[in-house]
Image (tube, rainbow, N blue to C red):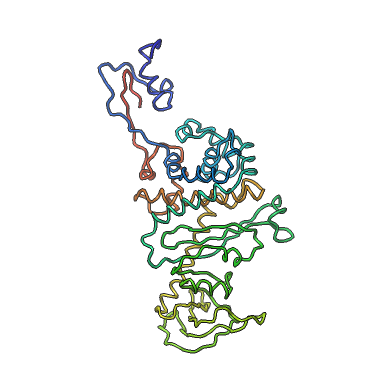
Length: 418
């Protein structure tokens, strides 16, 4: 403090300590004989707390492994990821929204170890940088979240499905699937018990769902539930060979060679039968899935009757019906990310920019799940996400997001700041 007016020393210290210019705030006289009392405890911004959950070591390793560090000479990879996550958490609808919002909170970004992004810089990075480090980070976070959120690995139930995302005409060069439309699909394996995806892939919208499904990792002994988009007997046979239980639907015109009829438990379950699928496919090739299967006819709430098929011949019929009903969880997941995260309106038109935005949206989802687990005050994932958005750059604890901020008084040196 050499050379400074000693009457100002308390105010300068407060500015340095908290990033607030106390000379502009209401101070009251000189309070002599007081040392620091009732000190306001330091709190991070909500955004800072969220960013602490990022597996930065895994992100750095991915950048090094893919040899892409040279792509970020001034605007670093960390700045890039921070800007995109800010956009997701803040609900920004454009690159300009991200840039303007970050510039308005530049002092809070300093504590995150980042800086504001210019719109053009962010656009260039989304277009030119590799998506691989973001995908590897997503994988690392999913593995961390899966260990943290699952209550146990016994009886793991995985749901497989995809969702379509529309793109504008500027993306027609790489994502056209009809004369007047362009789009992509996000293919997901979802852990219903952990309420978290464990695998994701992106394809153009004209790719059949079964094609990326065949490249998905399979966990031996797990249960896989999926719908008619994955109607492939050879793939079913590969799941069965891995000791997996499969629960899916039969098409209305698929015959079943019945070998046993069991008593149906009643209620929504109309029939319970054992049999074989057709021995030959339409191409006259032999059906590779020649083991006995079990068919349940189940009437759903709308009155429609579904033919549910499984390779589990022993579980109670109601258990199988309930497993298929759990498919609704992945539909809710797709609806949630489309409504809550920025995945319906894209910030760029190139394939690279679209893939990066989808990867970062899923990263944001996993971070929200991990963050919600650190507190018990807010049970609803949707409410938690909305409160994070409303308080993103405020100095708040995650378990206090629903409470009004407490009035804080600080007495320091020669002034009182309220």
